Length: 353
Image (cartoon, rainbow, N blue to C red):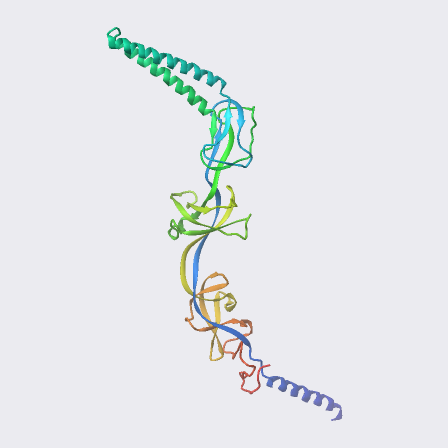
């Protein structure tokens, strides 16, 4: 009997310790709750768009000629009507002088024949012939002036001019680009959306655009035009929005991420931390009489740190927002702000530590 005494004592000791552990109450979990309320949610359409100038034109040489002067600085501002470039007009000036002289002579001859006709010394046919000659001479003079005007290139609107690629003295051929003038006081933003989302947008809707150059600065604008024709290859429709650009931060050619605030609604919501996933199902813990009840819910979109709740709960119910990981269905909880005197669920009378 004596050899087995240490084994018996050890077994009794372990049994006593095990019983003591089983009797030790669990601490009541501390949680934070808030009532379920309605929140504004927005259905957004995401797209990628390209920035375009409000107005943009490439000014080209109308004829093959030598450049006499360029009157703009690289990237400088030009006003409407300002002379951008002058082409050589020596030959055209000579042609104009000749045409004006011919027109003057024809006009004087017309006056003389008219006087003779009034006195009966000239026929009507002679007068008509001279009228035609006088008109032709004036037309030739106007043609020479127009030819000179074509060699003076002006800005068609206020804008910013591109970097210069030609120099005075260079001979340019007809169609050679001399400068690009861009009005970027506002920006046209073109993007496409799927045909299936066409019913969600309309002109006047607000949009928000973000560029890689200014990632922390959203640019707000509105939809101005929706293309009436859908591209049959992509089944998408092109949309054009207008963005104010008072500080010229946006440049034509920029790639921007577009968010269209298509539809706004009020729905019940909870913080993202309140939602627990189990496979394809979602749950929240509703607190009633200090008891947490695991409740299945239907969820919608996530926005600004909150989850849209479509079913399973009612407005005003208290949902756990902090301490969800400590909970199981039916457990008694202690609320933030309570004194540390909550009773454990087994009724032992010992407060949670």
